[in-house]
Every structure is written in structure tokens, then in C-alpha cells.
Length: 244
Picture 1 (cartoon, rainbow, N blue to C red):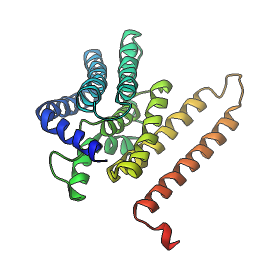
Picture 2 (cartoon, one colour):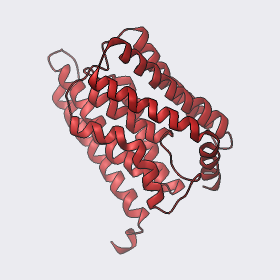
Picture 3 (tube, rainbow, N blue to C red):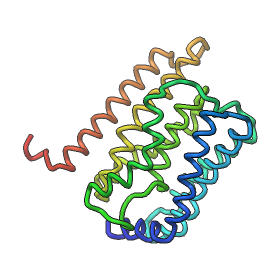
């Protein structure tokens, strides 16, 4: 746990000016997507998201988290997500157009990178040993909010990667004492459930097995299991098992 927080402190201390630039650039691009969703703005946002994922892979994991176990595999994980954005750009997929879907859900998710450091301060942490806006879990939440607000068709591969990361984030609550990641699991898991449900509904008229009805039931079961895991982790965090 000490190594985990020491690497976070080193990362924040060494990169906080760049993190501010990343955060302001992301906010500007979201506003432009909302007000002036031109092709150039959509291309800029895809390049931004690719760069942000490569930053997490290269700078956060390979440079600052070299003392952690399996940092190279986590770097590969985020590099693949960056590559997905590059592929989406190269394939000229008609994504990042404003959908009007889930606006009241998408906006809080996109603001979540700012909530992460506020939550750290409320928990008694201080700079630089605290969560910040440009860290893996805060970037994951922002990505899901962006997809909810601006993706007409779900990129199911990217959604699966983000779902996997949300579950990793939940495990960090237990192992590294970082309850801020309840923000990730508590917001991203329901959002990803919406993604997968819409993906299934979109293909409901096509032949295939299992049927959409079975897939929806499996999604409901998966959502229930994840919700129970979140509750169990929360109870353990507050040492409530001994009272039950």
C-alpha cells in the first residue's frame, strides 16, 4: 500500500502542470462538442482521448509506477484503449455526435475527474498523496460519460475494457485503501449496463444465439452480482461485517 501511494505522490508532484492542461483541454473539447460539433472538433476529441490513454499508459504506469507489480501489463491495457480511439478515427466511424441520451447521467460522469481530488481532500489526504483528475480511474469515468453523451452507437470493445477497469477499481478499495474508487464502480457499472443493454436491443432483430431475452437476463444477473460485490466491499470498508 505504501508503494502505491508513494507512486501517486511522485506522479502528482512531477506532472501537476500537465494534468491541469489535460483537464482544461478536455473541458474545452466537451463544450465545443456540445455547442459546435463539427468534424474537426470530433477529430480533435478522438485524438485527445487517444493521447490521454497513451499518457496513462506511458507516463503514469511506465514512468511513475515502475515500482508496482504488473505495471507493464496495465500500461498495455491503457495503450490498447488508446489504440481503439486511433482505430475509430482511422475508420472514420460516425461517433462523438451529440445524442441527447442520458444527459442527466452523462454530465456528472464527465465532471467526476474533478470530484476525485475533492473526495480525497474530504478523506483527509493532501497534495501530492491524493487522487487527481488525470489518473486511470478518473479518466475511465470521464470516458464513459463522454460515450453516454456523444456516442450514437456503442463501441462495445471499449465498453468491455472500461467495465473490466471498473472491477479493477473496486478491488483497489479493498487492497489499497482508496475509497474514492467507489465513485468509479458506483457510476461506471450502471452506465456500462446501459451500454450493453442498448447494444443488445440494437441487434434484437438479427438472428443469433443466445437470444436478446437471454442476454438481457444475463446482463441483469451480472449487474446484480457486481452490485452485491460493491455492497460487500463497502461493508468491509466500514468494518460492518462484525455487526451483522
